[in-house]
Length: 197
Image (cartoon, rainbow, N blue to C red):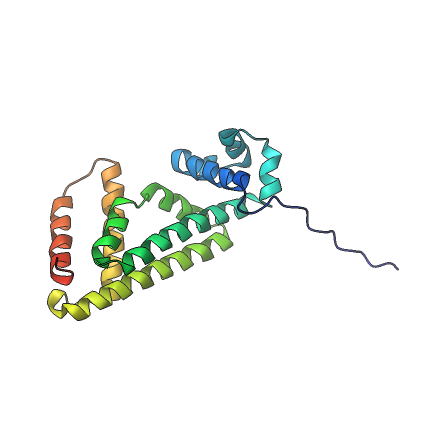
């Protein structure tokens, strides 16, 4: 009896090509503007003006495309955190990234998708852990220079700062600003003690 030969993997479009990036750009736009329920190969193809089947030439599944989109975005964000960590004022730079560039809508959409896409969930965990490691490292260094700045651990402060930034960003998007000035004053007072000019 002849053995069955496995089918060769189908050819995939080149990773990193202009079309590959355009598909990820289109997927990001759909996710941000319309939400994950609208994120289909058809919608992405319409968004960038290609045939739907071309999406599957570049990505084996929609889950692969979504995971790659998150990976691309998270790599960019981690590089921004690393650059901030190397700056003269890392806490202020990291806080600025968290409070001014966090896209609460995209975060919510990716968290929803990560509940059903195992590979995406692993990427989300990696991003959170790596970004938190960078934040903790910056906070530990600042707290060594200014030990009176706070009695909480660097890890606790990193989680609080990330959570506060996300909450403020989400609330601002829907028009809530109650208490925001007080929280920002508290953060500014901490930064002034931990990372004085």
